[in-house]
Length: 306
Ligand SMILES: [Zn+2]
Image 1 (cartoon, rainbow, N blue to C red):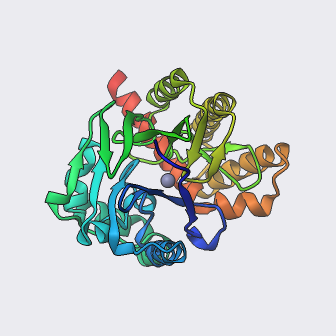
Image 2: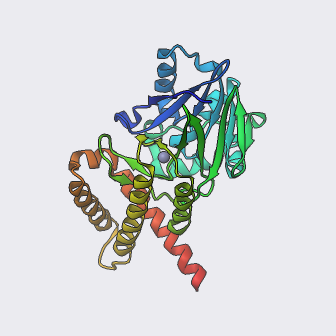
């Protein structure tokens, strides 16, 4: 059985409780869920050292998906001997991240290094594809993959038993929370965002009836079914709201961003969250990303029905 993991706050974007990496103690060493991005690798290594763990001794890293904020730094651990476990669609990108880095450079330009950093390559022999419902045993620990697409096609949540409780590490499929609040927000990232498929992934997680969720962005959820219901509600609301903004011919791109941010602010206020916190955690970058993700999804839907 797994004992309680340590959650290391990566202080992503200089914010507290915005992104985490989880450290598990095995029989002889340690294992991570999520490496975080390259931009916070030094923070993660310092956090490990603080807990008496040599970062070069990490035996395995389980990734929920290969977006830069989850798997960007996995290559450093792989170079130091860790085995990397990921959805089959993620393997080639981890081995050769050229395309991921090119598209990140296109989107983030000169800000890429400070926002995420590039994805580091992993030696092929260290990267292992894991299928849905497959259980991986490492160093006396066991993690089961739950395929959960919608945010990304290659998304796994990882479940394990911690002190007798069924726990699920949800990556991005169960959304994000601003610290100290229960409002669920969502990264509707291009190019693979699909709300219908995301909804099926939420069905799948609900069916497990977990005792606890652990969100990468961020923290412990003690009431999984309520949280998953809130995630579903936010997914429907945000997809509808963004679609209406995108379909309004009177709005140019800047006006769309303002309309979206206004809607988020109103929703945040209704949940007792300040505009400043809303802006810090759902910065303009998220607004741009979500507009792009929904637009791309709508284009595909409309192309398919032509
Ligand atoms: Zn993420």
